[in-house]
Length: 399
Image 1 (cartoon, one colour):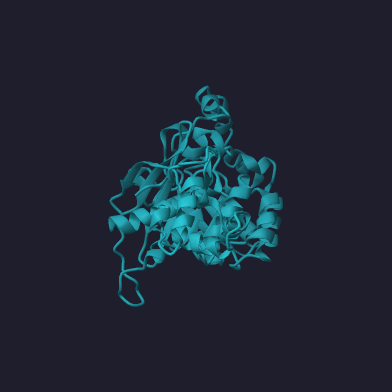
Image 2 (cartoon, one colour; image 1 turned 90 degrees about the vertical axis):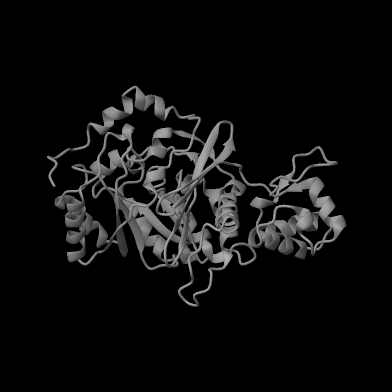
């Protein structure tokens, strides 16, 4: 399947239509002197039918297709590697140029298929429990690079026949558009630090002429970029997950460095403001379980106090260790006791199932290949960042 249309006349860089929503396509058509409805046709061909060759867009006039081929392309990042886990989780490594690669993960379940996509090449937030943060940061991804992950994953899953789940409603094979029913911005990067491209991607994913996803089924995960949370609530509210990971500022400053700029009180206030616009009536707080760091019952009781300030549910995430972190996963008994403490206080609590860990596709394991411009990796290897981890209060480990 071709992903780049050859140029035969123009020497200008081709316009990548992958990153244009129907309104932008209609505007482009108008600028060319064509009917705006051509934009709707193009959007359906590209995003609903997954077609990249203009010659295959058969309801467009031949002369128009030829003009498109000389001035435009439908291109997503090329795939460097594809891995399939024993639990049928899929992971793709996308080449985003200049030695950088990002990862995308598909998680099939009985009632849905979730695609976890990346928004940046690396991440500048540098949380010590995340292998992406260890890689450092290179650049933001474009709309085409973000949406292209969804476009390619749906194409690959349908063409390879990898997904054979059945719809519970009618016991018929799940239609192509429902193979990926949910999208979560939980891959590499902090989505709200790449706001404009993420917003453009959201609008394409939600548009009925493109992917037609429900706002309830698209989730932005953020470490707490408060001003951008407020903007998202106004511009395009979708489901929101907040990477909390600690119940007090002293600990969260160390686990989520962004907390030094937007401490917990400001973050919780932003969550409540967001709920006035959100498609769901709760915020999901993500809380990674780190052995002897944030998993004591005293931490759980502090977390209960925070949870009572915002309508929420709490998702406990077993830590997926990687060598450089120096951190360990909480025991199953500790996670169970922590969860029970929250539930007894009336807090809706779930424990995330670890998926794809045998192909390094589980939460916190996405690393890709990043040419770090921030020298985070170098500072960590020199022990500068690691010294900050030693300040995390440690208690005696017990089962």
